[in-house]
Image 1 (cartoon, each protein chain N blue to C red):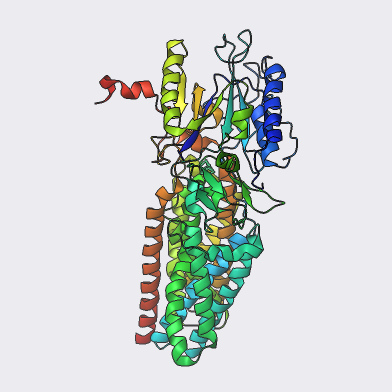
Image 2 (cartoon, chains in turn red, blue; image 1 turned 180 degrees about the vertical axis):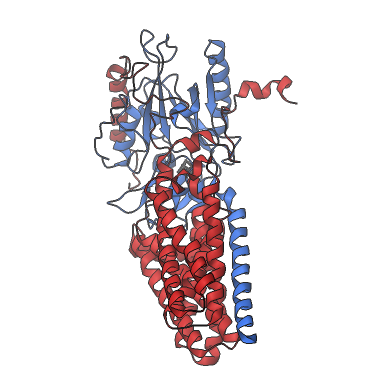
Length: 345
Length: 260
Ligand code: SF4
């Protein structure tokens, strides 16, 4: 844990350990798993006795809750800015800016609380690493927090400028979390790396529009936005159900995480879509749809984190799949074969 | 200083776990609790925040052993696992604080005084190596005995290994040695011996290499490990497209509102 300096004593101790191991350390019993026993063996199919190959995410509830809050806040900033330049009602602009700032100021403590060493959270801002979505994200959150808070308290002319910045950063807030989990070694996440940012973005847009509706804003624009997002979420749900043969996507359909994905998907996709299509003119129906979207978005974020945990525990995917997703029984390179000229063409 | 590496040869390993003990002692790694796996004699199970060397016991159908283990019994495959110290290391790329660095010896090192425990390296290691220690809050893994290497000493595990199953030295020399070793084993009839170094994958090779027998998957070594940065392009593209669509639809929605 601390860096140490090798000394004569420390080296003598290692030397003694080596001698002892040489004398007494040999394992010369047969194993405890006779062939034909019902226990998992260490084989190509089972991996190492079926034990997990990857480490599950250590993230607790703060992170998926942050995905939800931060995404909604980001999309709210976009709505607020657009409403302002389109000359929509001042109440909507004010509400949207308020939601953005509140979400931003809730996001930071959530992220800090999840750190193993919360006091060191500023270490995130020591450097900027474009190849690390976590680093990019930390900067987006910090800048978004500043811009959205400034928009709330600055004088009107200045607020319009910071609102533009807040909206641009809000687009990042709504989508980057999909990149964050997509670009990982967790199979169920990386398999959907090309969809997750859009999925989370749509989810964020739906929850921002829904929150504003529930705050008493009845613009049809909000209804249309929420409808568009729900349509995309419906597509996402179909997409998940369609790839039945895909091993990496199993946690999206089975077990605890599979249940959550389906509940979250129904609440944010087909249900609000149908409600808004059929009863979009009724305020009450729109409120119900808004509630469904919000709950769906929240559950969806928890579902994806749960799916990641389940995915890491299943060694079958990292053991059987090639990078391109096709199955591979092919062993790693054997150097002899490679240097064989007959195999070179 | 030269770039260093590990070559761990499972055909020489006798399963004594001296490397595990030496690692724990030198690095003062806390106990991770005694767990009885009931799967084999190996009760360490996996690498983790408090296990930086792990000897795997892969049981085989009985056949005469050629390895360091007793020829009269079931042929064991013992393989001492360790952080691979990847050429393209997922953990290093992902670390947002710059805590994870590449040392002058080519190893991948987590600086404990910088790590803030964000946990992102945990999900970006394709080998399931690095983990966050719950009571401490920071991420831990094999340091390649960076402190010892600075004093010209070999890592504790290599020093304690009684059979030279764990070789430590100049990476390029070890790579040549590995090729010779494989050729020799093949010559002795162990045609299933091979080198695992992930060189033909996006990981781009590892500084800790393994001579193993049989299928690498029985050792929980992934046949095609991927450094997660390969997913960045498609993920950011999706984010950019989504951001554009969100901006435009919002604009369109409010423009329609104005007209109606
Ligand atoms: S094996 Fe994992 S922890 Fe070790 S260098 Fe590679 S990515 Fe990092």
